[in-house]
Length: 321
Picture 1 (cartoon, one colour):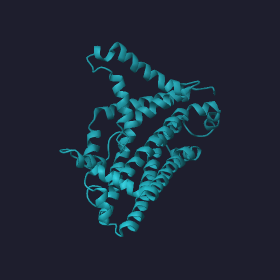
Picture 2 (cartoon, helix red, strand yellow; picture 1 turned 45 degrees about the horizontal axis):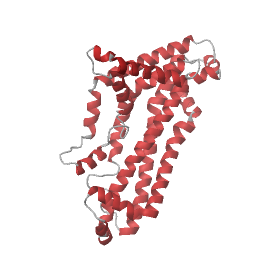
Picture 3 (cartoon, helix red, strand yellow; picture 1 turned 30 degrees about the vertical axis):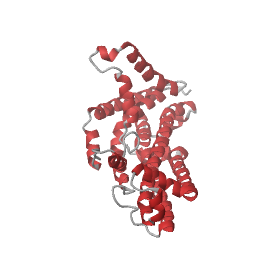
Picture 4 (cartoon, one colour; picture 1 turned 90 degrees about the horizontal axis):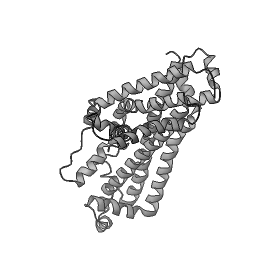
């Protein structure tokens, strides 16, 4: 694996636009939208957030400037969570198409012949692509998310400071603007295991397909899920109905990264302030829940099998398409 680092650099350089620029561009667009909203309708934004919280009215804000900071903190928290969701979704789309083309494009443009002339094994090439998709891309999205949230907070702080003359309350209470960053960072290694079967399957389709890898990646699992739903195959095997659909949906929409499907700690805290009896889990508690799930480890094993088969197909491939 001595060639792994150069291969990772190669993947990053070849796909720099999608892996690096896309999440930062998405974050910049969101930050610009926030600035425009703060400049043109800050009072309306505070009114909406205060109405949701049920604690601060428009009249109170106008007559008590010191209440602006707590209201702005809630507004920025909502924008920060939205930014995390959109950037993570953007990253997922980029990774999806990156995986589909990862092994197919090498054969299509015949660059596989060049790489085979170098002292680089097929296993090293595929593993570098897996690491890029499962770890490098989400890590870049994490940095873009933190940078976007910091920029949003700075813009909001400027508006609050100009309006009320004080930043007291901007980081107080249950809505510390940056506390979700810790959970996001902890979730990254769990995310690698969680998405491994998806990444492995997409790369297997990319290695197998002679044309249209998208259809090879999507139609087989979709067809199996539809057949299971129509004929109750898994139910006849004493399993819950629509098991295949459930497994696919769980793997795609129950990602441990904040706002991929689960709410981050601050978002759960927001719901807890609105719904009596709701309790926000600890930062490490949710990570332990994932680590104790059999589906996490079974999925990781399935992903490893898909990746091993993709390596086998790449090694046996003799022609370029």
